[in-house]
Amino acid sequence: GQNIDQPTEMTATEGAIVQINCTYQTSGFNGLFWYQQHAGEAPTFLSYNVLDGLEEKGRFSSFLSRSKGYSYLLLKELQMKDSASYLCAVTDPTDKLIFGTGTRLQVFP
Amino acid sequence: EPEVTQTPSHQVTQMGQEVILRCVPISNHLYFYWYRQILGQKVEFLVSFYNNEISEKSEIFDDQFSVERPDGSNFTLKIRSTKLEDSAMYFCASRGDRVLQPQHFGDGTRLSIL
Image 1 (cartoon, each protein chain N blue to C red):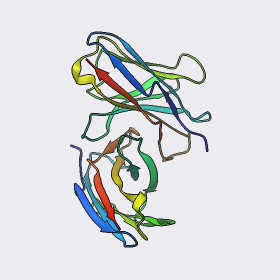
Image 2 (cartoon, rainbow over the protein chains, first blue to last red):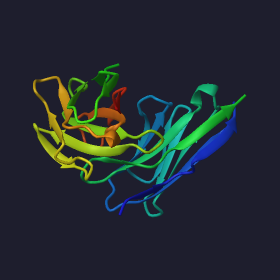
Image 3 (cartoon, each protein chain N blue to C red):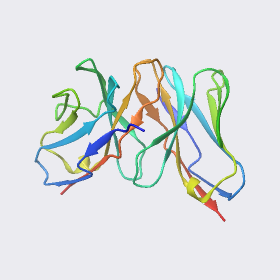
Image 4 (cartoon, helix red, strand yellow):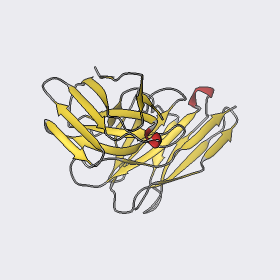
């Protein structure tokens, strides 16, 4: 079966660091992707991991442990505009994206 | 930066009618996808398309759905005889041909079935 779990909601303060966790159990695995989605808008690609380890992209970093079925997205120097849903998604060998329900992040001043 | 474009942005249709949702993928991309997102729920895969044929389809993608690439730029999703439960945001996505490139999404079409 396919199962991707993320916390439903998180809150953080402007300027802080937040870590959004994702665990997955899928019948196949090619890569793990993180997308940002503002309400009513399209998912926007942030980062992806194929191999274990940390990928850094400016204020955003993503980590993957394939043996543990675990990933996290790290957001540094939070800004108000980072308030959005963050979607964890896995691609299987058939290439489709399997999404989690998303984590709604609220950033407060 | 090149982007995926979708039209219309919002479509309101009576139940039982046919709708066609249109997408123009990024020009050098070869892999195309449709996803949908019912309000408040997660993004769900519908269908993938490569080399002028369906690569994979989900259980949602039943006989009322079809996809077509009628020319070199457009990629369409047709829903025949729409149902109330087809109301959702429909996203088109495309990606390049290198292995494990990310899929890039269009802004979506909000489909409302009355």
